Image (tube, rainbow, N blue to C red; front, side, top):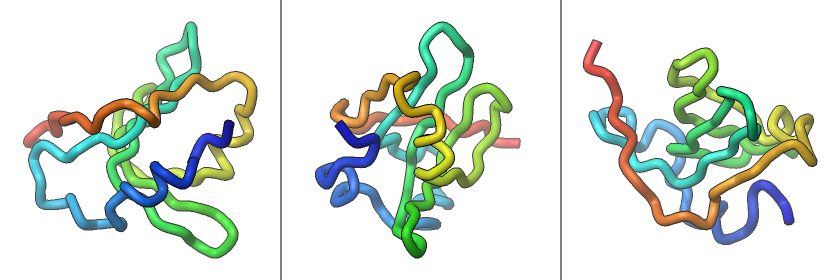
Length: 94
């Protein structure tokens, strides 16, 4: 199963569409079991042959961009919840 299936690709809003939201919707979570590393996908769009996401990255504990190609480097190690219902991720108001 691909990390980014057609259903998730179709549901994701484009980059910067939720940047004013204090509680952006999380559409998918990719995580490495038995570690503190997880990527919470908030937005995304194609970029050339790749796909660029924006979301929260647990591990460095920051919002930022990350690429599908970067996540695919961990292929076989990942678990994902891309089929999960969209949810809210609370952004700190710093």
